[in-house]
Image 1: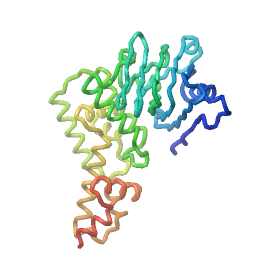
Image 2: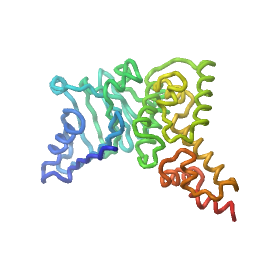
Image 3: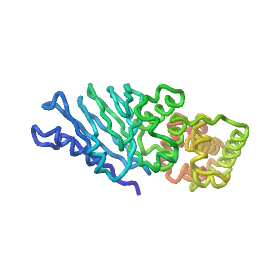
Image 4: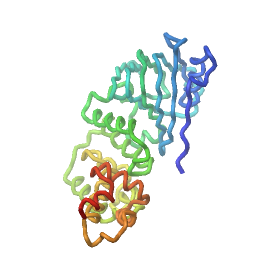
Length: 314
């Protein structure tokens, strides 16, 4: 069962105490930090935190502020966490390890929670902060410290990674094709490529990817099919499977969903299956919930499954 979201808002603070409330909220949601604002009397902010498998997604909206983390605060920390800050609106100037990154809307920056940092938000802003445990980050990138406080839009893979984070920032979680943990892994694969992984493509990896795609096509009807079982069937790790798809400019989840929807379209178009209900066809194609299938089908083909079938009959 998915954990419930948590929410903090300065609207709950007593008059004149919005900024102090906000500092306590950040310490509870993230790490121990300090904050100040050039406009304390008009300061307002909110955080909504969604558990997302091994990571947390934090949607923060604030007026202008300065945020910093000190060595003293770090000394009292027990967990090592990295943060990926994606600007949905507004600007961010992030400083860490002697580097400084100006982050504009549509871009993101990686921050190490166990090193001092400072953030400047000169405007009202909307930010997605992806909270990532150290062990999860190290699955995907060997030296994340070397990628901190650097704008991701500076490289091709970085731009692709930023777009993926942006897509997640605006996504309705009910429309996800895979469990949240699997989507997080797909994000991790792109982080690996954006964070400096420089292996070049090989004919062997191309053949392997084609074999995996064939396996997915043969097993797409199985609602239990996931990245782990697909990787095991090919004798590789789940991490490597996600990297193969990321290098090809796609993802396991997108590929699986596209194949299932195309198969469903074929069934709905075939007179031999006209007596089967939409729910039965959804089940044939690996969908557990007919309502989820209907949303995805409508998004892909512009019509609900029943309406699509009726148009063919007409």
